[in-house]
Amino acid sequence: MMEAKVNSTPCMPGDTLDDQVGDSSFDQDIYRQAIGCLLYKADISFAVGKLSKFCNNPAQGNCKNVKSVMGYIKYTSDLKLTYSGLRSGVEVFCGADWANDKNDSKSIGGYVVIMGGETVCWKSKKQQLVATSTVKAEYIDMFETCKEVEWANNFLGELNMTDVLQKPYVIRTDNLGACDLSKKREISERTKHFRIRYYKVKEYVDNGNIVFKYAKSSENVADIKTKELSATKTNESHGRMGLEGPFEI
Image (cartoon, rainbow, N blue to C red; front, side):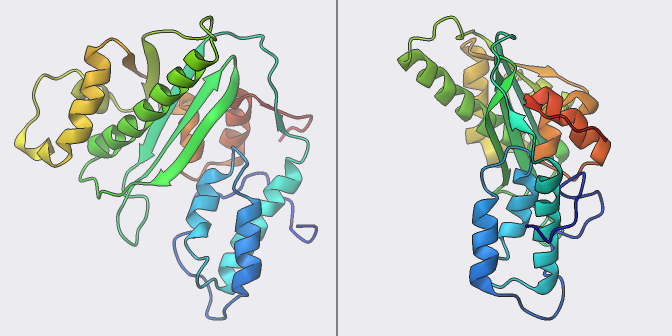
C-alpha cells in the first residue's frame, strides 16, 4: 500500500474492472490477501467486488487496479465513520446499474442504510438474474434492500431501541418505474419470471412496513455501490454516508 499512488476515487468512470488486464499473471495468494484487506470499507465495496472475481487467476493489470484502490485508501486515511447521534431516524437508499458487467450483462445492485445520520449497513453485489430492463434491475435490488431493512428492524427490536424504530420505512430509489411497479396489483406476462420478488416486495408495501419514494440520481447515496463515480461525486457521497475527514478535493 505504501507504494500505491494517491487517488481521489477508488475507480474512475471508464476504468476497466471487468476484464483480466494484461497477459502476465500475478501471485494468487498476494492478490487474495490484498482483496481480503479491502472488504470492510464502506466506500470501496463496488470496486472491490469487481476486482474480487479475479482471485483465482489475477493478472498484472488487475493488481494495478487493486493498487489504485489502495491509493484511494491512502488519500482517505483520515476518513472515518462517525456516530454523533445528532440526526435521528433511518434513511435507506438503493439502486442498480443495469447490465453493468459487460461479460455477462448482469446488473450491479447496492444499498446504504443510514441510522442517526451514519451508515450502519451497506452492500454492493452483482445480481444473479440477467435483468432485461432498468426497471427490473432496480426492482430486484429493492427486494434485496427490503430483506436488509427487515433484518435491521428485527435487530433493533431485540435491543429494545423503540425510539429508532419507525414504520413505514422509506426506501429511496432513482427509478420511477420501479417505484410504480411496487404499487401495482397485478404483473404482466413480461414480469412473471421474477414474480416471487415482486410479490414479496408488494407484501412489505401492502403491510405498511415499507414505502418507496423517488430520489434524484444526484441524491442517491447508493450510487457509490453500483457504479464508478468521479472524484467530486465520491466526495459528496462521503458526507451523506457519515464519513468524515479533514481533506478536501
